[in-house]
Image 1 (cartoon, protein in one colour):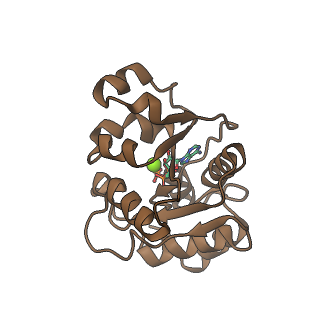
Image 2 (tube, protein in one colour):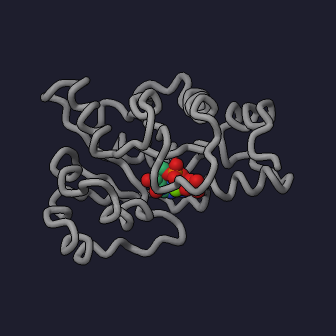
Image 3 (tube, helix red, strand yellow):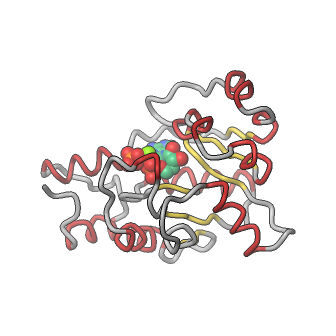
Length: 195
Ligand code: ATP
Ligand code: MG
C-alpha cells in the first residue's frame, strides 16, 4: 500500500486490514512515498517523520510491515518502479497486490505506465467517502486490461484524510481516534502541522 502517509491514519490501517484478511495476504507492506510527483505543490513533512509515524502505527502488528524502498531513493517515485523493485526483492514466486483507495484508482490514467503496473500486480481498490463508484468501463478504455487486474473489496466508509488531520492540528482541533495514539503523540511532540 503506497501513500504519502502525512500522517498515516485509521483509514489506511482499516483498508490494509480489509485487504489482508479478505485476500489472505501473507503481509501488507506500507510504502511511504519519497517525493511524490503528483503532490509536488505541497511541502511534505520530512520523510523520516512520515516513516516513523507508519512505524508507530503498525508496531506489534504481525503481517504489517514498513518498506522504505521509495524513501531511500532520491527524486520522484513511481509505483510501477516500486512494484518491480519489490518483486525483485521478494523473488518471482511472490504475488503482488497494490492496495489503493478509489480516489487513487480514478487518477490511475495519469500515473506513470499504468499498463505496466496492472501487468505487474493486481490492484485492490477500496471505497472511500466522497468518492463515487469507480467507472471501470472508462478506466478500461484508457488502460486496456485494467478490469482483469482489478479486485474491488468492500470496507466501512471511513471519512478520514491526512489533509483533514493536518487542518485539524493547525486549527487546534482534536484528532483523537482518527490516528493511532502513538501517532497522535508523535505529531504533538514533533509539533507537526502547526503553522
Ligand atoms: P492526503 O489527504 O494528504 O492526500 P490521504 O488521506 O489521501 O492523504 P494518502 O497517503 O494520500 O492519504 O493515501 C494513501 C492511499 O490510501 C491512497 O490510495 C488513498 O486512496 C488511500 N486512502 C486514504 N485514506 C483512505 C480512507 N479513509 N479510506 C479508504 N482509502 C483511503
Ligand atoms: Mg491522498
